[in-house]
Image (cartoon, rainbow, N blue to C red; front, side):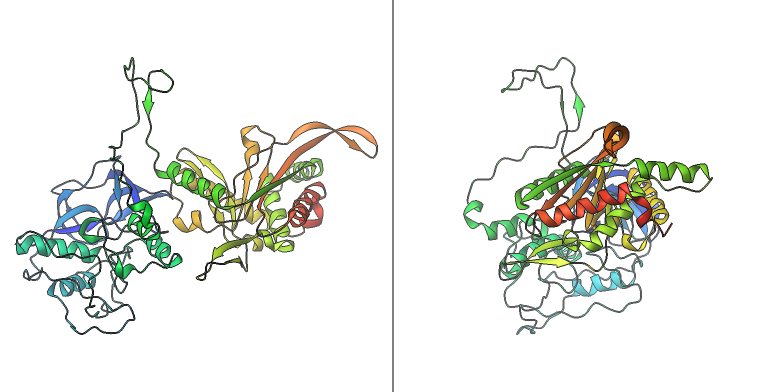
Length: 486
């Protein structure tokens, strides 16, 4: 009889550690094929359809819609229709490389590892991080046993060979082939590298010895790891209670609902908290007479020309300003010796803050400095559409170098925005309204907006920030000078 294969939730990109199960596309008993979409999951970045690397009959669905599943945990079990699975073998600890990449004294390759490689060779071409189906790209390279085991402890109690083999195969599938240790998340590996933590010395607390973020954090702050962990509370689904007798101890009021912080809201909360805790930010702002820009656009519309939106014009001015003041189009990174360096970029990926039903997301226009106002308008509209549908890719949502935020659509004039970490600046645009304005010594009614720039004071001083802000403001007040590429 064919052995049931357990497909574990892969890392869907950007080092994400969990995903919310939105819906199943299959049911128990269904026959599925390789690459067939089996479920839709929502990460902190976007909604993603997950394809199956196996063909066969669905034996079990691990999770219900609305449930959050950690990366590396079972998603679906599939029983192959044909019995091509290798015969069961005695489970042994997976061979690994030594820390220096040298072969250890006990070179051995397990039957389980060989079975895993055979599954890779027969898998789909859809590469899922942590599953790496070669699809004709060759066989995974042989690894050697290391002298000290990584994140795999000897079993305390006797278990059957079948159960041990299943556990070992599950552990193999959570490993990135050719990498140290049972680590599936790039975020965990990067954190360990930045803080000088040797993954080879850690024993993972996750299932089958998987090294989790908490294990690295405990190694970084050993004193804190001695504190008694708080008792975990089950996640409560959002609900509104009528006539609830549950009282809030602090306010004395009845609790009407409990809403788990997850998905995009969880990602936004973590990113904003990190921004405020790490970035010494400062804010400058200026009122701008946008009458000339509004009139220019209205004139183009009257001529029957396909006219970009006002945000696209401003985006064009922003990219020109960042070319002149590149300090605001950078990122700060920590080096191995604990110091910091400013990373500059040969290009501008302009993030456009977009409010969606799922929360605030920031898709980015890649190489925005190469686009005209019309091209920027088309790409901004496309990104806004895919963001509202929850279909923006992790690359589109995580590659920005500078953010433009149009909060004027909410009917507000100004805002001291929080920088979208790890960027170093964000420009906000308020609503355009009629205001009294002095023109040539006389009072007039003009179309006025407010620009607000929040910047990281580590990368530049106020003179640079003010220079950039004034550049964009001048371009809005005299738009024809920068719109020759229309």
